[in-house]
Length: 85
Image (cartoon, rainbow, N blue to C red; front, side, top):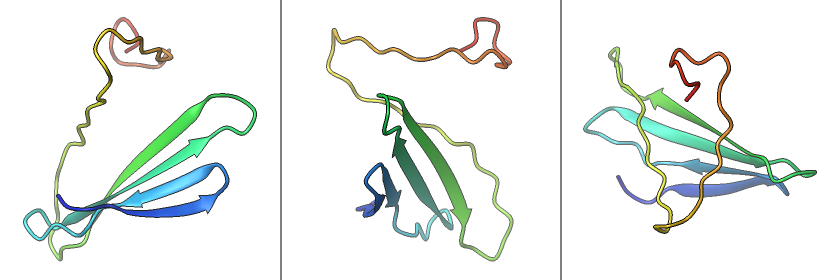
């Protein structure tokens, strides 16, 4: 919760860092990398435990898009799900 701190790493990479959440004891860092030769966008998300105790969390996210739009996502051949999602 709160305002993320944005940092431009280079012309294709941006990092977003959440504020430290005193309730959960963690902060989140997201790194977005745009391939300079295509439209491929990679995103990694890291949850960093800032507390002195062991934490166990699951990551969950949502993508907000305008209704009626199209989303194209590459399937994962190594997915544990039968359809590769």
